[in-house]
Image (cartoon, rainbow, N blue to C red; front, side, top):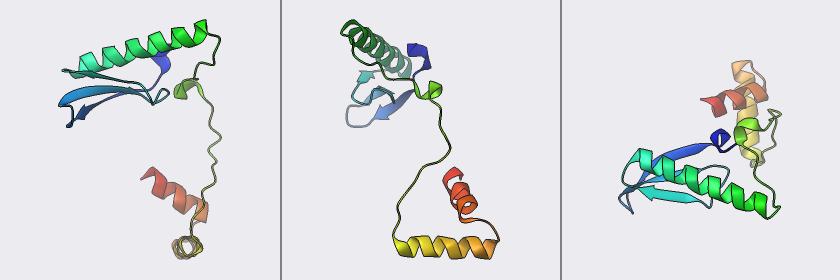
Length: 106
């Protein structure tokens, strides 16, 4: 199950080390001298955390890769932004949804 989680390794200028992260467990991290060490470390921390959660009967986060997304979400913007986007969409001959979707994807 831990193989399905979303891992990332980045450089921490502050720590001068690589840091391993897991999107489903944002409070966890692991510092190491190499990217591989950071990845191995965060994977072990996640495995230990999942085991602890299961032992205590707590909910284990579902991996992002296993979640179903509807493709729909609502976002609030100031009225003037909404108006400007609507005008831009009309001038481009596309729907507001298509314009915003293209912007988010780009």
